[in-house]
Image (cartoon, rainbow, N blue to C red; front, side, top):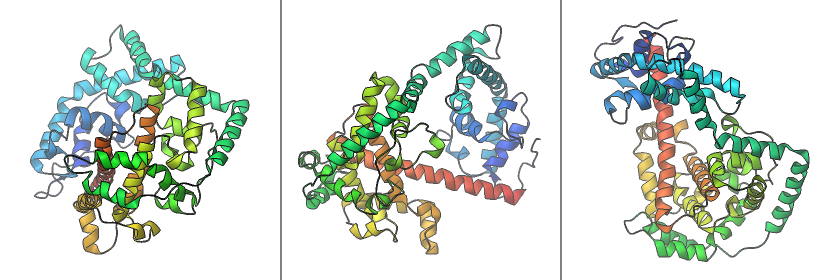
Length: 422
């Protein structure tokens, strides 16, 4: 089923981006593997092929808005049409890669996520598949799945062993019981002092290292075991964090919040680091068990201090119904985060309406979750946080959340416009 539409459903106001893409796509041949039931490109085709490899909205910002000008819509259609031959060749390469995948007995990962971009790369390098295409596809597949996927398969098989599962449960119970001990008070004034200068040009190396040496991150983790505290930070769905299970499966689409993940899910979230680490599976699991019982469920004090600092810096972004909002303290770092958030168009609109839109709620929790995940990945790669990186990591987590929310808002606007022109 192809979509055919007039060049401008509403002359003078522009063209929905999704409609312009659908129009251009309907004129291509041989792209069925990249096409959905409606005749439009699959969402992954747009995300993995059209946007990053053909349209490049970062370099061509006029092609990025949900509502395009007539001139931009024409340029977008022309770019997709010009790539028609490469897209058809890429579709053929994708089918070959899938066939080799079945032949090799590979089941890990989503084929579209793994192969769409590689198929387009092969199309650009080799054109339409020819006599030696099977060998090229097999070699490409081996490169994609070398190490990373095998490492995770080995990890899952290890933790799925009933004997190993029992040993992991015992080890988790032992370290969690041993971890329940008193800690010194958090030097709140020093954290505030750090947040006042960390975003400035020369940073706050001395203040950061003072907090690390004082064990401030570990001390700040004690309240996380009080009812509701970790939940208010978006790190668990439970009132109190619980000791993790070994785990037998993991999926990106159903990954729980950080403190609710099994040992397998914790390692799965950063499996690329696992593949490159060269550590034995048994040692990897043992280290993760210890980490799960540590402060903030991390092992490095510098990472714990960073989460402490982020929890205070983001307190200004807490929802009004969040008990943690009462902890809000205005600091230079916090004001910078708040100002960046309020500059977002969808946030400004929500503020004008006087009601928090869904896109503006729980932003603090989203930032804390992303920062925790990035720090956990750094620990698996044995990368401690340097003092001059602290603000970059906090601000980077905020930027990631904003980009994600922008994408959601743009998609919603595009859907509304498409429905309005249907």
